[in-house]
Length: 91
Image (cartoon, rainbow, N blue to C red; front, side, top):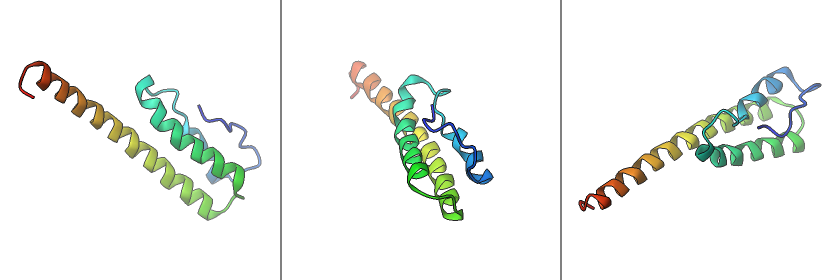
Protein backbone atom coordinates (compact mmCIF):
# COMPACT_ATOMS: atom_id res chain seq x y z
CA UNK A 1 0.00 0.00 0.00
CA UNK A 2 1.24 3.50 -0.76
CA UNK A 3 3.00 4.82 2.33
CA UNK A 4 2.13 8.46 1.62
CA UNK A 5 -1.65 8.57 1.64
CA UNK A 6 -2.14 12.23 2.50
CA UNK A 7 -2.07 14.06 -0.79
CA UNK A 8 -4.15 17.00 0.42
CA UNK A 9 -2.60 20.22 -0.75
CA UNK A 10 -0.75 18.48 -3.59
CA UNK A 11 -1.34 19.37 -7.22
CA UNK A 12 -4.49 17.57 -8.42
CA UNK A 13 -2.58 15.85 -11.23
CA UNK A 14 -0.09 14.44 -8.75
CA UNK A 15 -2.75 13.50 -6.19
CA UNK A 16 -4.56 11.57 -8.93
CA UNK A 17 -1.51 9.41 -9.69
CA UNK A 18 -0.52 8.41 -6.14
CA UNK A 19 -3.24 5.79 -5.48
CA UNK A 20 -2.16 3.85 -8.58
CA UNK A 21 1.09 2.91 -6.83
CA UNK A 22 -0.89 0.82 -4.33
CA UNK A 23 0.09 -2.85 -4.59
CA UNK A 24 -2.39 -4.39 -2.14
CA UNK A 25 -4.47 -5.84 -5.00
CA UNK A 26 -1.53 -7.80 -6.40
CA UNK A 27 -0.81 -11.44 -5.57
CA UNK A 28 1.79 -11.80 -2.83
CA UNK A 29 4.58 -12.94 -5.19
CA UNK A 30 4.25 -9.77 -7.31
CA UNK A 31 4.21 -7.27 -4.45
CA UNK A 32 7.98 -7.04 -3.83
CA UNK A 33 8.46 -5.75 -7.39
CA UNK A 34 5.70 -3.16 -7.05
CA UNK A 35 6.87 -2.12 -3.56
CA UNK A 36 10.31 -1.18 -4.89
CA UNK A 37 8.71 1.26 -7.33
CA UNK A 38 6.29 2.48 -4.68
CA UNK A 39 9.28 3.29 -2.49
CA UNK A 40 10.81 5.39 -5.26
CA UNK A 41 7.50 7.24 -5.70
CA UNK A 42 7.25 7.93 -1.97
CA UNK A 43 10.81 9.23 -1.94
CA UNK A 44 10.20 11.54 -4.90
CA UNK A 45 6.97 12.85 -3.39
CA UNK A 46 8.80 13.69 -0.16
CA UNK A 47 11.87 15.19 -1.83
CA UNK A 48 10.39 17.24 -4.67
CA UNK A 49 7.95 20.10 -5.01
CA UNK A 50 4.91 19.70 -7.22
CA UNK A 51 5.72 20.47 -10.82
CA UNK A 52 4.96 19.25 -14.31
CA UNK A 53 8.23 17.33 -14.23
CA UNK A 54 7.32 15.52 -11.00
CA UNK A 55 3.95 14.59 -12.46
CA UNK A 56 5.58 13.33 -15.66
CA UNK A 57 8.16 11.39 -13.68
CA UNK A 58 5.49 9.75 -11.53
CA UNK A 59 3.50 8.80 -14.62
CA UNK A 60 6.59 7.21 -16.17
CA UNK A 61 7.39 5.47 -12.88
CA UNK A 62 3.86 4.09 -12.81
CA UNK A 63 4.28 2.81 -16.35
CA UNK A 64 7.60 1.24 -15.32
CA UNK A 65 5.91 -0.45 -12.34
CA UNK A 66 3.37 -2.04 -14.67
CA UNK A 67 6.15 -3.21 -17.00
CA UNK A 68 8.21 -4.68 -14.15
CA UNK A 69 5.20 -6.52 -12.72
CA UNK A 70 4.49 -8.01 -16.15
CA UNK A 71 8.19 -8.95 -16.44
CA UNK A 72 7.92 -10.77 -13.10
CA UNK A 73 4.90 -12.70 -14.40
CA UNK A 74 6.86 -13.68 -17.52
CA UNK A 75 9.90 -14.65 -15.43
CA UNK A 76 7.75 -16.83 -13.18
CA UNK A 77 6.14 -18.50 -16.22
CA UNK A 78 9.56 -19.15 -17.77
CA UNK A 79 10.88 -20.59 -14.49
CA UNK A 80 7.85 -22.85 -14.18
CA UNK A 81 8.31 -24.10 -17.76
CA UNK A 82 12.00 -24.81 -17.10
CA UNK A 83 11.13 -26.67 -13.91
CA UNK A 84 8.54 -28.76 -15.74
CA UNK A 85 11.07 -29.67 -18.48
CA UNK A 86 13.65 -30.71 -15.89
CA UNK A 87 11.15 -32.79 -13.92
CA UNK A 88 10.01 -34.49 -17.14
CA UNK A 89 13.62 -35.29 -18.01
CA UNK A 90 13.54 -33.04 -21.05
CA UNK A 91 15.72 -30.26 -19.64
